[in-house]
Image 1 (tube, helix red, strand yellow):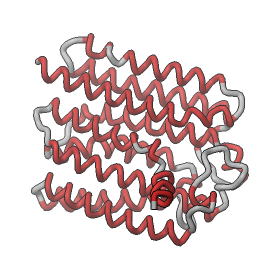
Image 2: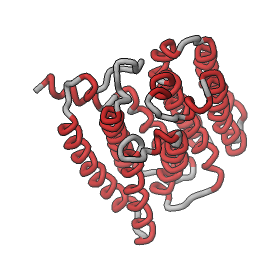
Image 3: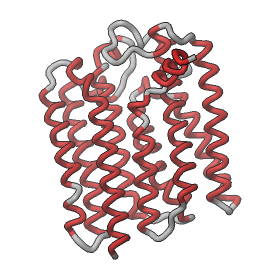
Image 4: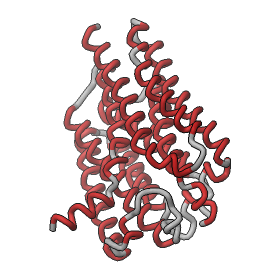
Length: 305
């Protein structure tokens, strides 16, 4: 039993799950800053986002295994089906169970947070779209991840919708300025995917998986990565400079900038894709810390004002 649990925990890829926390923390802190915050909404949103992230990871394991992309030439961690510890049939069942749990959690979140039938219907539709997108990334005859559209999907769901949607669930409203931190959150989430794709660039190219990294080539993909990092932290800083009374609050984000600069230099210095393999948990931590620092800053500003 313990061994089976460990296998499924590993298949869920716990090192990637902080990405779910990042957008929820940012959206919730913005709601707190606006004077509207609900702890149950934040917790239910976090649970739903985490289940969606796990669903995406399980579906990615299944899709890449079926298509042969997960093979001995791949540099990343050995996945569940690839290693033989989980069958494709068992993974299908796990995906179905995860979909049911995600629907239950999402339905509870929407019904608790919203009263308007229009808003409820809209968020249920977005929830179904998020589930479909999590699966269709690598599963199906034309998975969009194999066409290089994964970056756009991550930017939308882990940035724009993740942050703005969480804000709306707390407040029932939306405002243009919150899209700055939403963009920042999304760009850093894309940076996580880009590290994954740069690491696997040779194998993905050989298997016909045309990620953005494959389309750009390794050198341009590194430049793209630096732009993602710079655009991410800059979006947060611009928002803080616009919305807070003291520039000192924005300066706190320099801590995040220092982490991102260190990571960016390591990416540029890497001469072989295999050297990027240890950087996956690092960029996940960088993205999470940046979002949490922003959340702390914006919450702290509210408390002292």
